[in-house]
Image (tube, rainbow, N blue to C red; front, side, top):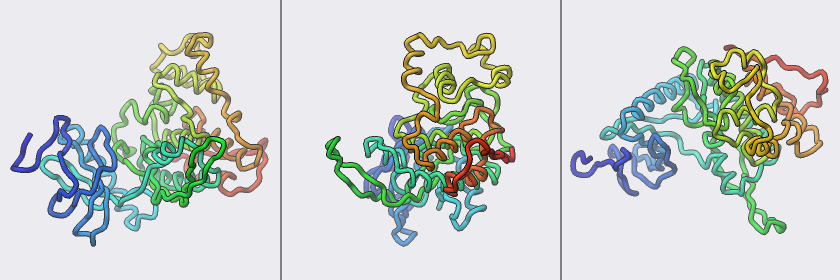
Length: 361
């Protein structure tokens, strides 16, 4: 569709643009940073902002995506109101406007996502010290959201961005390849397109599949603890370089959970509307089927993923166990997570160790 002499959309509703185009006589397009179902993100020079580079999210000219963008803008406005100095590690909205039917949101320009970095680095795990720093920041940012009655609902490595992804390179003689180590591990949360206020309607299904909490799969209702489950999955991925729950099917997903975290609590099974997944109070799953053998071979109890006997590795796996509790009320809150010995690096007794979840919801 053509509007005026120059501005047009492609058949999917994306704005057609080229490097050098200037939007609103202000934002000069440099290149494309990424694409999603919502639209595209481009790097721009902000000629009203001292020539600084910004990330500009250009939403498709499609009603449902435009409506979703307005909801995201409301969230980003709240984040800015509560954190004008940008201390709480959530990507900051700088401006928004409508450009010929395309909602456009400008953000501070960040670097690669943690997922992109891993992908470009042969999916190598991060060193445990780097995981600690990234985990600390993620918990702080999510804690800030929860304190302000928000649930992110779509936490995943793609939505955690490095502020600066510069890296050093070493050559692995065994695998005959270059391997990267990021120099700085400052990160920020991004993509608040699915973020939900406590008082808003909570859709039945949230989160990208691999990071989806059991209460969401079982349609038991969800609240802020679903973010903690996602963080646990993310930290496992940073530690192992593989996705914890690599599946696209509810039944298989739950079977993986049982293999990794033990039986699903009977109370959750009794209350779920997904009764077709269960028989006589147990997951309907044939361990001897092809799918059952695949799950058995590829999944194991969480503690068995520990890469070293060093105490910090024990502490990380213990933290993950507390984040990946089935019952949402028993999961650690962000503030309780930050008191875990993994962050203080203080020795602790596993037999006597207990944390309260202190969730406010």
